[in-house]
Amino acid sequence: MAHFFLHTLIGQVILTVLEALAVLVPLLLGVAYLTLAERKVMAAMQLRKGPNVNGPFGVLQAFADAIKMITKETVIPSGANRFLFLFAPFLTFSLAMTAWAVIPTNDGWAVANINVGVLYLLAISSLGVYGVLIAGWASNSKYAFLGGLRAAAQMVSYEVSIGLVIVSVLLAVGSLNLNDIVLAQRHVWFCLPMFPMFIIFFISALAETNRAPFDLPEGESELVAGFFVEYSALAFGLFFLGEYANMFLMSGMVSILFLGGWLPPIGIAPFTWIPGPLWLIAKILFCLFVFIWVRATFPRYRYDQLMRLGWKVFLPLSLVWMVLTAGFLLATGLLPQGGAS
Amino acid sequence: MMTQIVFYVFATVLVLSAGMVVSARNPVHSVLFLILAFFNAAGLFLVAGAEFLAMILVIVYVGAVAVLFLFVVMMLDVRFAQMREGLQRYAPFGAAVGLVLLAELALAFSHWQVAQDIGSVPHVVAAPGRTNTAALGDVLYTHYVFLFEACGLVLLVAMIGAIVLTLRERPMGRRQNIDRQHERTAADTLTMMTVPLGQGVAANGGFRRPEHSYYIASVPGSYGVTEEPVPQGKSVDETGQGGLGAENHGGLAQ
Image (cartoon, each protein chain N blue to C red):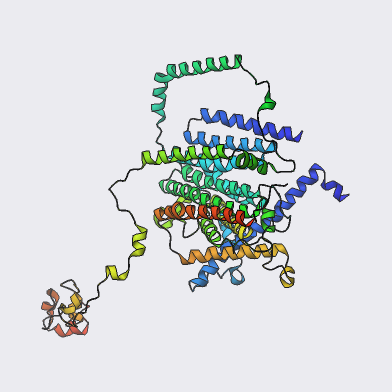
């Protein structure tokens, strides 16, 4: 009976909504606690205590921040384009959520297991720049505009190297499906044979999410806060949530492309007892820790150095590696004969 | 049924936003409507079952080309009043060009020819059971690889041409040569000197201090003057025997 109901149209809709909630609710909770974790971890690295007043170890700080953000007044600058000004944070936030539809958390466990999953992720992450660009323009403020322009140039530059890194991974997999990409890493995670690409991808992910040391779009010392200078209250909160959800997404992509997704490090007994989703979560958390670690360690890049790194270092390196990968796979006969649906 | 509804939704929004691209007053709004149009075109591709083309459309056109459009258009300083002035002058010319194009279109449609023997054109039949990504790859990279690579070369030449036309080595400004910075060692820039201790050094370590400061009185000999510091100012003179008091207070009373 229940089985029959699930195959009707309404049943499918309800099922999809439930699946989406099963992904988004943990994600938003994770975002809330990532802000706390970032402050705590950075505090520990700088010999401070971090937030420790609200609740034990400050665990309620995330909710205190959220309540503060919601109850404040949304200020819209008089010269701003009202619709676009409010549309930009919604765009950033909803794109960060949309991408999670294709992330597989276990074998076959994805809201949408589509056969161009990687391209979908690439498409969604390349749209992220619009939220920033529109916010910078619609604020009608010079600081915000400069921040928006910087963000656009930066994100477009680093997407190129991200794309080429993904191509070398795809060469070794022979499929664009994220599920297949994880299953191809049963024997060895791609971070070992493709270690340089793993590093390039991780650094590009830092630049793509506008994180330190590439946080030039918001560089507070020269641009006040960059593209969201004029934002306050809930609109600011949506930007904030979107950026942190993007960090989760990029960590998820690193885990799936290079760290074996839900697979345990070795497929033997004590490791296989832990369920797959927990492995994926552990890997994502590890990547997020490195994100924070990097922020606490490195000073910000200068703008021309950032562009030089993207175009003159990462792009040629990933291009050469792509050719090397293809050549190696062809020479050893390991080239996967993909394409069968 | 469902597919048709989805198709008409995408198609309607596509046509409307395409209309807004040309009719919007603000050029930034035009570009944003263009992006919306791209999006809906990608949606139509999805409905038609061409998921690879849909994703590539979003990645290439929305994610890269339109970003650069938006980038440029946002920085343009468009004066709308000036544009309206131009409209009157150029309207007849524009109308003439439009009429010629319309006439040509009419001619083309009235003499439309369809090739009869379509079966003789060599084309590739995709193997059954392949995803359409793989089928596209077969066509582009296996059957028509030379044509495809030639297209790539044409684009490369265009790109190099654009760079050559616009790149000028301007002498102004200083550029950072990172390799040179990396090659620099301490030996290139530093020479270690052995200086005899305490010789050729100004008294007080060469530090300059303001001439009249409380420091003279508070730290005797700190200015390198050996004689008794004589504090300047009226207050000392007035107190007369206040020299002792000034010393006791560390000169801060001044």
